[in-house]
Length: 118
Image 1 (cartoon, rainbow, N blue to C red):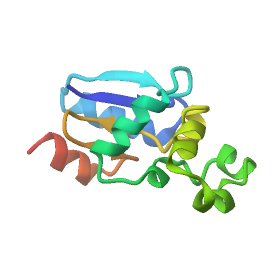
Image 2 (image 1 turned 45 degrees about the vertical axis):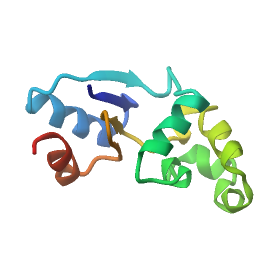
Image 3 (image 1 turned 180 degrees about the horizontal axis):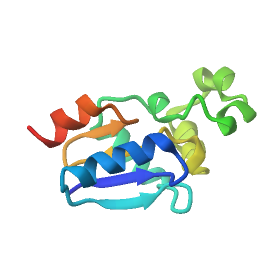
């Protein structure tokens, strides 16, 4: 099962989605801005990934900068980080590819190949 969290206006998301369709992979696409993953969903994704909750933040995004999160993250609890991530899909690094046993953040073709084609 492949779940692809995306933001339709994001060019990196389009590249990731194109990779999936070009390789005829069956996946479910979810607009992460319209359907923001819940706090519990994000906790589960962090727990089963090799990433920390900090890695799930879209640190180059306007919303991240607007909220001054760069300065605040180090002083926030894990629960607070998940709460804020689940408040706005624009805060989450994208695309987010969720497999049964792995979570990939962003789109790196080599990582997609290793996770999906091997």
